[in-house]
Length: 120
Image 1 (tube, rainbow, N blue to C red):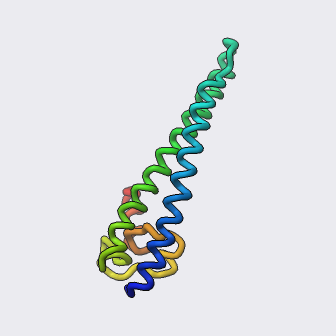
Image 2 (image 1 turned 45 degrees about the vertical axis):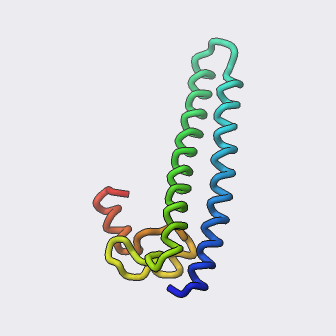
């Protein structure tokens, strides 16, 4: 991959990290606010709904944090000649895939094989 392409993807990765980091912080605040705003009465359904909402938000935060970690790893790879090469087959990852998912480590075929085995 040419250096100009790697620079373009680096910029995109930094933008994505900034966006995802902001989303995670907002979701954390929301989870804490949900905890503080928990129903004061003792109705079990209200408590259950509040707990479900908080658990869902925290699960989404965890997913976002995994994406941020993948972006950080891609930022390291983009500085080397390994960025854009599939970790599975070592072939180039299609630019269309990197445009859509700049932190992708696998080409579409290797990703599909991984998912077929249930190893997302």
